[in-house]
Image (cartoon, rainbow, N blue to C red; front, side, top):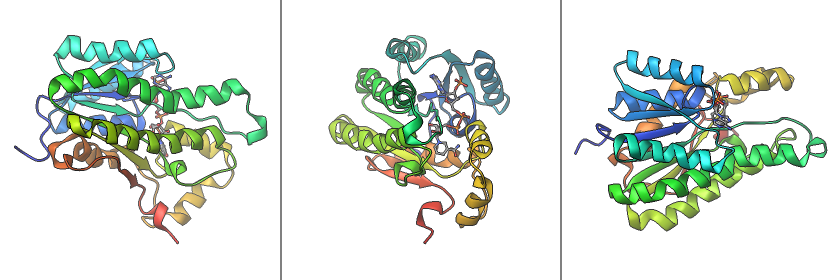
Length: 254
Ligand code: NDP
């Protein structure tokens, strides 16, 4: 058994068509996994599949709206129907609405919680039978620095990302006996579409991140390739329930 080999493994990455999800998808494809790139935007997904294939990997696009439980379940079925198995699920799709707490509508609150947290639960629940049938599996949930810290402009987002860490622990405790490892990754400030918008919304954010990050730079989607391969591969078979920062030291800066 090669520790970091994913040959023949089937992986779904929600939001795998851009940003951090694509960085993880590319890493796992390089290690041999077949990737289902799951997202709403068909053109973006087709572009991501092309990118993975051009780098020598295997990928297909699958349409999903994680706000809809039936769509999440259909996405899982697409993996088992097409490839006969599902080994790896990356719950990465996410969104944010930045406001002061008193300004959110309840609808906005639910949109963020459902996209970031409820969908991860629904997808994991739907993936469980397939992973059981495969003799085990790997679930990687994407948290955030907001899983640890608070911010005035992120009440629903921080709640959802805090919830991701606790959901991860609960699933890990329940499914360890089934050889399913469940871990979360907490990205620092990463240069993606999501944070490009944040930099427009939040004054001084760009420089504050540079000043506080010991590595002295914003992270990149490809910084997540290695952690994805580790958590998806036999190398992490005795690692479960953890929350691993990928943040250039942001969270340990005194
Ligand atoms: P992007 O905006 O690039 O990616 C977000 C992804 O989520 C898109 O691919 C999008 O796909 C998908 N998505 C959003 N809503 C839905 C939906 N309803 N159904 C299906 N897919 C959906 O941002 P990032 O790469 O930055 O974000 C990825 C994850 O990383 C998120 O969970 C985010 O919270 C987290 N994160 C990001 C950090 C950063 O600094 N960038 C820091 C910490 C955490 P589509 O376009 O097809 O809708």
